[in-house]
Length: 431
Image 1 (tube, rainbow, N blue to C red):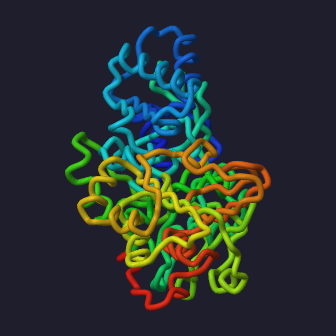
Image 2: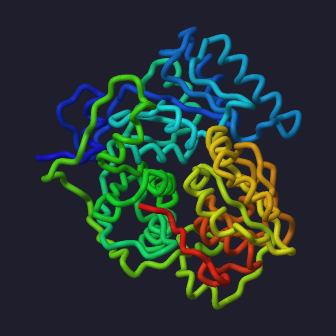
């Protein structure tokens, strides 16, 4: 009996030739990740384990991205604690203010994750790296602290749901729309503790940025992991980034799935997820007719902070201004993304449109800083969650959407499509 890509990776990491869903395994970790919020507790747990040294200073990644540059004394002390640990244990992959990026944009960009890896992170959106053909999953800081010490993670092998996407995408439809639609169809518990394997001709045609976005939000359907079989686009992306050896795994033709779901994308519209669940997805044609006004637009985050996302937003905003009643905050994914955006003139366009462009940071996504919502305010955001109080006051509202919808909304002042703007040039992302 064949195995899925998720099962093959986990089998390899625990020294087995085969495993099946429901089994518990102790697997060797290739990358253990934490940030300025989750690392302190992981470090304290590591110290309690008592090994005295980390299992491999090359396989731990510490990214100070949530509250940096430090917003207050508490966040400064947290970062200092992590910084001292990184220096003491000579952690190779450590990023601080000035070099840091949003972790799930940064690690793939820097070549830290490779196909076939087992990645565990004290952040639920660690599942992003499945776009590279890695098994990547979030876990609690205490479990991660043990991984820091022993290089092992105790996991239950998940069942896998196979999603098959077909059909050519319409203008403005992106990976964000595919995943919002999918979550809308199966619900926020539709993939509880299951690997979501994204396949099909539409995925084959999707760029890496769109693939990262889809895997990033697998957790929003309850998924243990989002994952894709590596292909030529994957190889092209990691070329010149990943310098170590790695092994590519792909699902066997006779792999067994708990379910197979087919999605016809040919008529799919851009999606908007209404408060207060990512599953409350609606097509933009329905939403535009409602003319829902907004106070703020957020473009960026680990979900949509890549250069491709900024190109789409800037292309729509070029020659236009953010609506006078709207604040638009742009969060580049990494310093490299910022530099590229500067070289391409994207920042000039965005700042010229009256956007506030920040240093790479998670910022308002988790209600941290750089764009907190006040009582009763409404935002459209390219982030991944729209729970009550996620971005500020508990009476505020968050609508999730793609960079294209967010940019058009910022200009118009209400949730709409770029097609609702006058003389819009269709510069939808090339697949």
